[in-house]
Each structure stands twice: as C-alpha cells, then as structure tokens.
Length: 265
Image 1 (cartoon, rainbow, N blue to C red):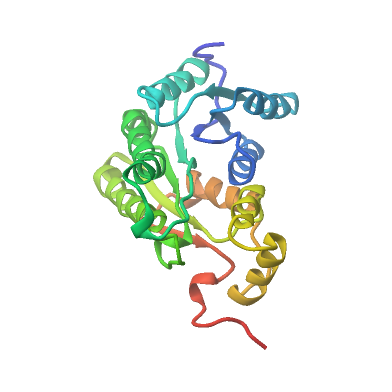
Image 2: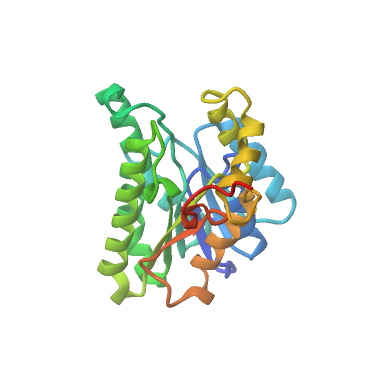
C-alpha cells in the first residue's frame, strides 16, 4: 500500500532492527508505542520471521533485506519507508560489529570492516534520511557503547569508532537543530543478549558466569540491562517527550561508567 494516506503513525527506520538483542528491543518498543517501523537485516529468513511475528500482532512493519554497507543501501531503505508509509520521522542506526584485538594486531582489512559498519554506515544513513527528517522535524538516535568513554583490553579500535559516532551525533544536532531535527546517542553497557554471551565465550571460559559477576562488581545496579530497556530509552528519545534533548550521549549501563572501583565486599 504505497503512500497510504490513512497512515498517521510516526515512521522510523531501525537498521538491524530484526537482529536478536538490542535490534529486537528497539523495534518492539517502537511498535508498542504506535510507531510504524522499517527494519533492515542481512538475513532474509530471520528478518521475515521477526517481521511476520510483529505483523501478526498488528504492527506495521516493512522489512528491507540488505547489508548496510552496500552501495545504495541507505537510499533503498529510505525509499522503502516513503513508498510504504509516505513519511519518515525517525532513524535509529543500530547495526554494529565488534573487534577484540590489540591495536598492533589489527589489519587494515579488519579495521576497514569495523569502521564501515560501525561509523560509515551510520553517516550514510543519516545523509540519505536527513532531508526527510527535516520535513517532519524528526529525530536521530545512534547506538554507541560504554567503550566510547571507558576502555578494555583489545577494544581500542572498537572504542574509537564509538567515540567518533558520538562526535558525529553532536555534529548532526548542531547542523540541523534549526530545522527541528534532534540527534542523540545511546551508549549501552553490557546487555543481556545472545550476541554478548557469544562474544564473551571467545574471551573467557564461562561467559554466563562472567556476565553475572560483571553485573555484581562493575555496576551500581547489579543486573544487566534487557534489550527492551534500551528500546524504551530509544523510543523516548525519538518521541515528543524529549523534544528539547539533542546532542546528548546517554548511558544505559547500570552505573558502570560511574564506578571508581569494583563493588568488592
């Protein structure tokens, strides 16, 4: 139903919105708040299963199967939003990859992939969407990481891309605030998600035990955040209740970035 004039719900793009973990959390929070959502995923089967599940529950979902680093991917996604829903009110750059290597061991190819996914794709999606966001006085939320502020061994270049993304977010806020566009970045800490458990399984003997221990020792609030809690924060930042919040980096980490030392008792 292209350009359906009956569509009144705000419309958002969520890159990686069909991915388990934070992607699911963001999409589900937006749908619950009445948004129509365009989600991207590289895996057609996984994306379709998630989109069908939400559609069956009454959500307005459009799936675009692509790799966010492909030439033309941002333009295709924006066009899909306009053809299906006729407008664009929000953009969430959620897609990201990790890299856990000491700086001196990272190849040019590894860094290029990291930077292309974690920074360049976000820039290109903003560039493709900004004219539509100006029309609707819309909002941008980028998904960063606590590593933008604090670091850990083997995360140096990953942290650098997230710090760059934060500075870029402020730049968008400054460049387009007069047109009514807001831009913020959310920095999650350790999230309860299958991706994080799988990543940590490559670094520690018992990923589950490590995550539980981290929550107890490295957070003020001793439990990990759920993907839906990140989604609720993103929905708030996209919506009208945050209309004077822009250019901000907001941490959702249970207080990890507030601790001077571990909670040892």
